Amino acid sequence: MASMKEYKCPCCGGAIAFDSTLQKMKCPYCDTEFEMETLLAYDAELGKDREDQMHWSEQPEEQWQPGETDGMRVYVCQSCGGEIVCDENTAATKCPYCDNPVVMMGQFRGELKPDLVIPFKLDKKAAREGLKRHFKGKTLLPKVFSTENHIDEVKGVYVPFWLFDADVDAHIRYRCTRTRHWSDKNYNYTETSHFMVNRGGTVGFDAIPVDGSSKIANDLTESIEPYRYDEAVDFQTAYLAGYLADKFDVEADQCVSRANERVKVSTEQEFAKTVSGYETVVPENSNVDVRNGKAKYALFPVWLLNTTWNGKKYTFAMNGQTGKFVGDLPVDKKKLNVIRLAVGLGVAAAAFAVQYLVWLL
Image (cartoon, rainbow, N blue to C red; front, side, top):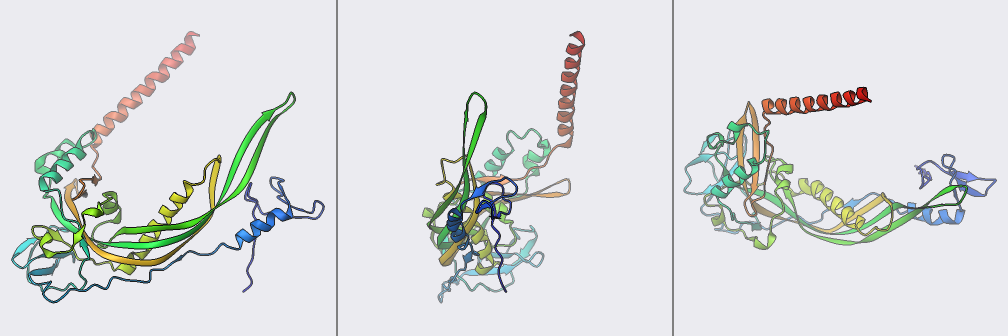
């Protein structure tokens, strides 16, 4: 099938055409004229446009060795399907996702061994204190919501993550402008210069985290990043003792699209920082190619809290290593209405004062 190409005016975005009278390309919308030689480079640049090539060639292959799973058990919650990892002595616990009590009856089903684990550095007391700090300064928070009796149990959970490494080759084209102004005795002048700016290079990414559990929202786990990878250690089952854990239920290849998204956004942000000295900078085209992609399997520490208010479930999360705390809070509608009323009265009073001054004048 034959392809089509349309030249766009870099000034206004309108389609430009060859003007036989001028022997130039001219935009019928903003009347900008282009020398044919100028468009040769532009045409060559347009020919480089193509789809992103973002494919990961390697998947983690490290398997459990004989004897390494001794003393470790994985059970499946019959209510929500969440997987719970614990030691062989655990007889009963609660599901970290639906909070239902479970009795350990299953057999170990895990096949892929985690490569790394970041151990918990903060305990349950620190998690409760973090929640209290999260409440401070929230004037619209219902008072009863912040009382200790209303808080459900805080649970320490090792959340599965895929960590992606890759090298990225990128080429990004920007449309930029500079404007200068001057005057004479008759007119004020404005000159806008348009530039096509190219940036290309290679960026290396290490350990891009993507949540490997479908039970926890990605925006929640990403909000408590970053983790300090220098404190990660080789996985040992002993680190799970006393905590809940979840085996991944989202395969690495299912997480590639999210890793690609994060790679592309980060690459474009870093390249944009190098384009300076212009009044406007608009990206026109971006090519991001991933190579040497591979993934590791890791467990990261997260404190989770679930509580209910007026029939709605609220989930909070705290980074078990750094203490970063996130979570949505309910709003006391009575307090909100009082504030709205006060603001409304203030606006009405100001309007009355203006009208009174106008009457006086």
